[in-house]
Image (cartoon, rainbow, N blue to C red; front, top):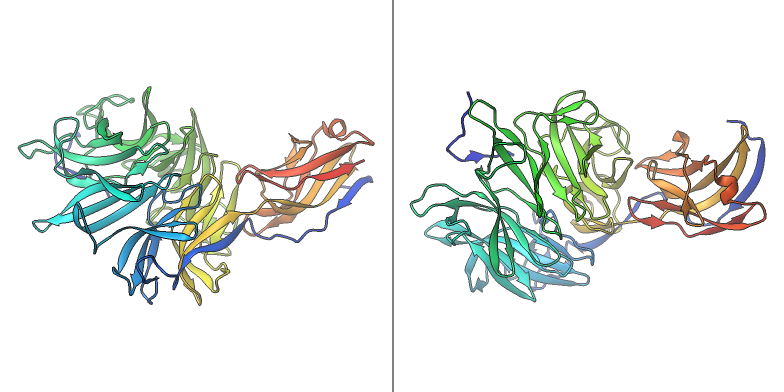
Length: 525
């Protein structure tokens, strides 16, 4: 018989018949899907008079799951030499760097002795984990950087909206949305020191309200259990939906279920729980959580362990009532070889943007690189940046340790570099380009062949006067390392209608993953 544990749990966490059309386009070839440029690198000046990462052991990180916004700001943790402080949190905003918090300055909340993750919105507001030392104990708090100032949202010992005090596990990585609302996980205690009221809360307009707490009813029956140490990260979108991990106690004779749930204005719904069926005849591994992310449409991407089938782990996308697979351990990768297990990776949590594109960092066995960040969907995956890639600042990527994604399909990542300066880099998607177009009659049907660069198998579509055509093929012989192709073919039965003889049409190719299309090419037959 299983019972509810009273103590807190620690989470470890063909023949060509006739050539009708040939249009050559002279352009420079592109071999990469993304262009990489530095955001801040070793030796760049910091705002406190020092230089970023300017020692052999100095390191940095993109410091939050959503530490990169659509205007290009990125929040980083950076070790700085010869400045006022050795370690700081910075907001790098275009050509400017702003110190958010450090261990040296005395704030109105005291001298900070703990700095954790930072997440930002498109206004440059930042939600920050921080803490001060009182009686040899770190007392955690959440800070909001807004209008050039730090404001305290909540501190351990403050009263919670359910009649307890915030105490026992600090605060989980906060999530901030477009309106400046902040969602967070926290533990609670009663006045006499009994653990109670652990859960997820939201700060909005100066008020803290409850989202969900332990013993609230779950959508699969039973009650939620949220007694976690350390405090867990939550995700919140601009609608105020909150994604969270939870256990569910069904009854004294049933095993506790673990999973991901989404709290919305209309109630809480399940995303996944252990032993759920997944695409590909897979089963979620028992006694494990998913690690997920959320977008404004309510789509959730999550990484999970798997117990049945040929893979031991994978990443899946839940949209509405449908779950699709992004990748699974043991499957082929855009770099050749196979995806390695997600188990034991330090940041297996995938990211999703508001266009539905997913960024993931996965190790690879037997491929052209040992590890890479990929951008993908249920239809396609393409390399963003990989170990061994050359950087424009010199050297090659030795290791990628952290990353974040924005809605423009740009990825900010921190890289340790061999024979070059380490730092934070920006990967920006490159638009596809058309180099030639051929319309051929083959075996009684019309075939439109578009040759070019920056096209993604499974994702790129051909458009005629803005109308996407179907029956798309991506021939294997034209695939490139990294997940690109130089040829896309359509056999759509509408081609003769869409390309009437004697009329000029505009042909483009469009990558839905990056929301980028080629320049239009005028052709006629």
